[in-house]
Amino acid sequence: GRLWGAEQPPPEGGAECSGPEEAGGRGGRRLRTAFSAEQISTLESSFQRQQYLGAAERRQLAGTMRLSEVQIKTWFQNRRMKLKRQL
Image (cartoon, rainbow, N blue to C red; front, side):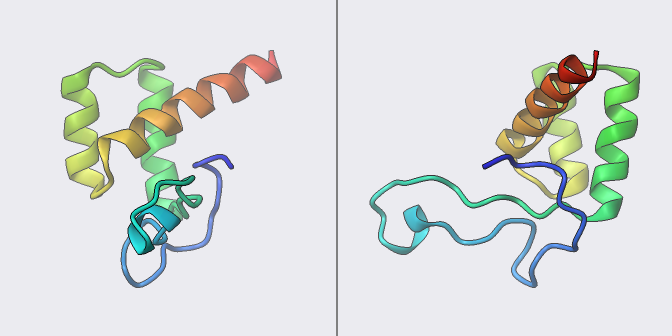
């Protein structure tokens, strides 16, 4: 599934759900991240300024938003694809 677009707040444990790889240690797909409305707003405003993030920008944004760099990277990839579909 995609890792962006959910507008409900994250579960109590944080911004991501526990996945099969955490429970059994046998890999598998990560569950969809439920971004809060505030996180989506921050990500969207960053995307409006700059569609591609460098490592430093990604690291800073991840730290500010308390998300992993992989989650930020994936959100930006998905957002670029959404923009491409709209055009």
